[in-house]
Image (cartoon, rainbow, N blue to C red; front, side):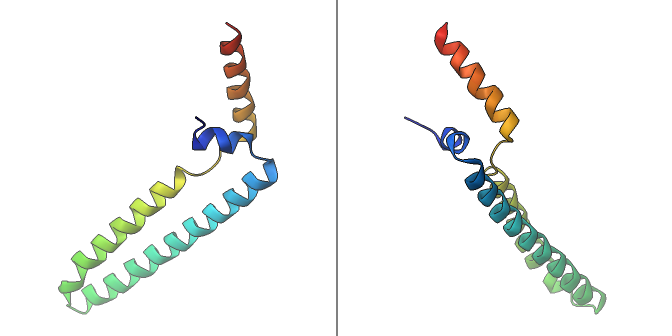
Length: 94
């Protein structure tokens, strides 16, 4: 049974590049949302409205965790994938 990583390694480099671009674009969007959230929370806090800090913290934590989860789906670099493939072939021969 093949795993997700093995399928990624066997994919054509163009598909891997497209996947990388999509994931990086979503990560940039998450980062922009976190900066916007920080700015809004600081503005509210400086105005004296402290009720916003915990919901902003929770939303920021969710955004961080979603970004960290997306990093798992980034494909391995092509050179690293070749090394892994060679290592697997050598271990099968033994």
